[in-house]
Length: 90
Image 1: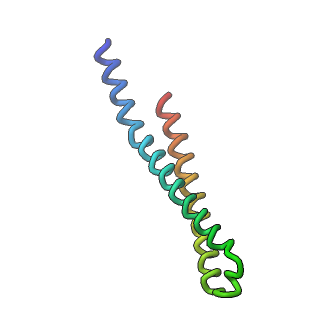
Image 2 (image 1 turned 90 degrees about the vertical axis):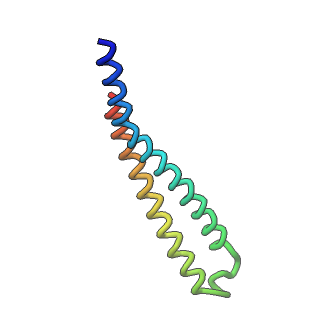
Image 3 (image 1 turned 180 degrees about the vertical axis):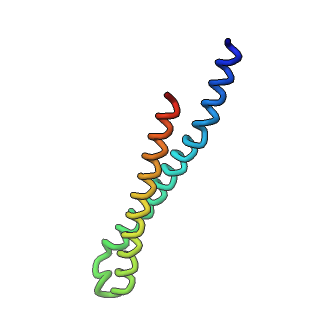
């Protein structure tokens, strides 16, 4: 019946709602992290950074590596959420 169809559709929407939110959160995080990566790359490209302040250069390099790991993690979370979202929509 139409009532059952509407109820089923509403249940399906409620089921996929957190998956859509997880995808959106991961996208926002990736955007933020990619901006941070660009900032770090700019700082690391400064001439003579490692000559004038090697400790700062080392710290920026570590932050860049951590940012790359965080981006990979956010991408994985997004892919997982997207896969679950597509499965739930079927």
